[in-house]
Amino acid sequence: MVALSGAGQSASQETAATGEDWDLVRDAKTRTTLAYVTTTPGLSIAMRCTKGSYSALLVGLPEATRRTKTRPLQITFRDEEQKEWRFNVTTDRSGAVADFPAPLARELRQGGRLQIVVPDGAAPGRNLRYDLILPGSGAAIDETLRACDRPLVDPRDQELDAIGEDGLQVGMRWDRQIRPRYPVNNYADGFAVTTCVAQPDGKLRDCVIETEHPADGRFGAAVLSAVRSASVAYDGDQPTAPRMMAFRVNFIMR
Image (cartoon, rainbow, N blue to C red):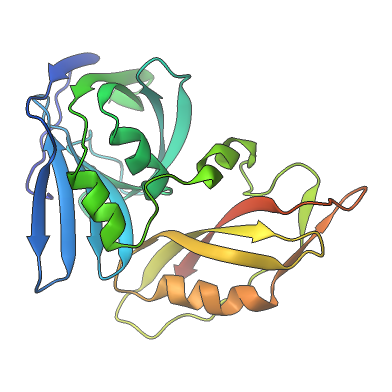
């Protein structure tokens, strides 16, 4: 996928991808299942499961600057409302991986019109807009989700809109913040994005590593180990039902 790069320079690009489903690649040696589609502007979109780690990749975006670590993209699926999705810049500066790949995959599997706005993508102060028609994926994307034990339908997707930029819902705050230890690996940095269900007593349950990078860095495992001692508190009345939350942990070797 890294080789499939080369974004166009116009402020608006349109294409129609052909085919009845996304292309599917299986690699037993690396334990990878990959579903991808390539569009005529040079933008490739892929859903990938590698050794139980799930990720969503965009390849062929305008190159990000060296200092850029994350890039928010405005995405509109079909006739739905435009929403902001956070992506993380990869080693290839024209690539990006999504914070929430499984919810993104469940949207993309339906196919149809997809609009992606890249802030400052055409030039400083000038956004780049991709306007695409993608095929639905009744098998390929589903296979990547199953390979990583991700549900094809997840009601927790509907709760993502209620989560603020800090990962907490209104009235929630950290009581004991998560403090994971740096895992043993060969990487100088990495990250893991996690969703949890916060109980009324503040304890965190049913935590899921939504994505981690690099995939074999064991950053997600470090977060899941540390989350057992973390907790949240509530301002005002204590809730009577569990509430979803999300957080991102950045690992940097000093």
